[in-house]
Image 1 (cartoon, rainbow, N blue to C red):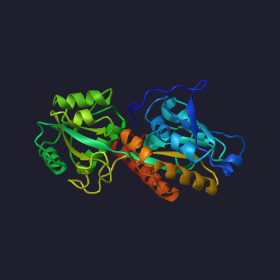
Image 2: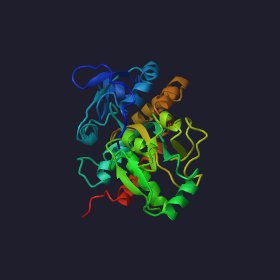
Image 3: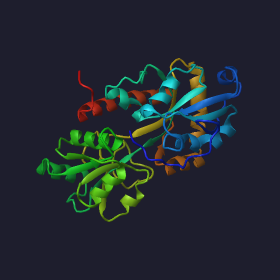
Image 4: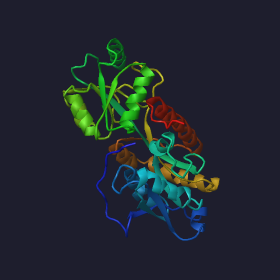
Length: 330
């Protein structure tokens, strides 16, 4: 799924290393595994949205613990290079992946990324969830999700929606909405989110779903109207915007989690200690404010709760990709 950079690139260590992150667990299996340096691998370029949540927690996490972690960018192959590196790492809890819902999309589309997105990984801790908002042109005669669905049903094939490109999160989210609502709205793929939003502002397309992060300019522009948010609950950033589920399409939910996962086989005691340390830091006021500033709703979960969300999201991504027609045939 496409993500816009949320932080400027930070200075790095040699090569792909982009900085140090203190994370350790004194007297734990992590420290005993040998050495005092561990890694959080970001499978995309340094300075982007995947790196930002790790940066948001590093100061407090360093104070809470003691082992030195470095954030290492390993971009390439749509995230597969860094992801494979974690899948094949020693399962000692000292190599983690900064992951998100797009973790499942490559496999869902029928590609062979040299890893199984479920079997090769162990969930560790969720940091936050990113929501999306459904924007329409202000001239569209619909002020609620229910009214938009009714309008689209009265004009099948006459309304358009934009996206950041085929297979992007903005495409999958809107296509899933269209499918769930049983409406016929034509997809227009653009090169990026900004272009799609611009054309909605000019009424060349009538609707678009965009991440809440960076959407303030659109929300405050009189050319647009916000109809709803895609998450399972209202966003802490936009408490007055109703969910799509509560305002016309019961049961609808589409959001992206951002969390840390590791290779399969990490001892449960090590996973639990990591989860407890990360969750403690993620519930502090300072860290929560940073995560919200990145467009995330803080959502620390237990290991078991995160695993349930992980599997639920896998099912959703596979279903959405299939519904949108992007699943590989044969």
